[in-house]
Image (cartoon, rainbow, N blue to C red; front, side, top):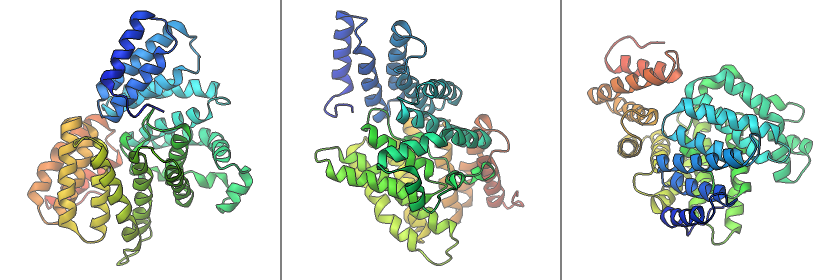
Length: 392
């Protein structure tokens, strides 16, 4: 795990000294990884990209092409490109990491699951749902093996307790239903170097189970929280991810169940997502994208409880953060603006909604396929607020 007392500046000085002393030092790649992780955690994605690139360059010079140590560099590069909105490069790095981990999956099981997860997440974001489905199917045996290893029980017993014995396909969403996924920005994913291996594995497994077996996902996230509680002295920031994830699952249960006037699951989700927001606001920079993620989650929950004006304020803050950190033309900025436009439309501010939706649609059309569900939703809402016939 990255030394939480280390700063990018002090680590960069140490790396420079090590490079001057011995450019072939075997410690250099891990130091680059640590530097990349620190920059990524701080949302300095360009610097993270450079650090992971230096690690990979060293490995290309000193290691064989299929050496397993290259996996972390490829995944780090993929995450940095993804965060910067360069999805073509992110896909290339993710695919290389997947090919490499599949050669070493017996000894790199956690990295194998992580590599599949990152690429599945990207495919969902881009609307390439069949590819996401096929990749998850390939990852299924790895997921089961890792789950059994972490829980410490034989796999049939695990499945039986969850009510899915003999029906492994039920753990994964059918390809035709993938459009229901609200693909989370990569900032919701575990940050490389931020977590111990078991932390990352449990969180990634929880994310993979999120849309097919939410009870299993909650169990995995709760296991993370229990481990954090038992680990005195660890950074409280680590607890924000499982708190946020459980709150998201509870909120979706209220929405998916068609509960009508019932707000049971929204009420259960509210303290969890609020606590995650409080933690992130305390330990992260004011314009960190993870804070925008939490602001949006809280807004979604309290909107479900009828507190629309309070939610509007949070969504406005989320847009400002995305604009500051990612820029006006980033896809995640467009997503935050769409969420804000929905809130404006709900409160009857149609002109404000239109001013947001038109540039949102322009950005989406530049990045996504014309029939992507996000584009369809934007066009539908734009037609609604301008008084045209909504597009089906």
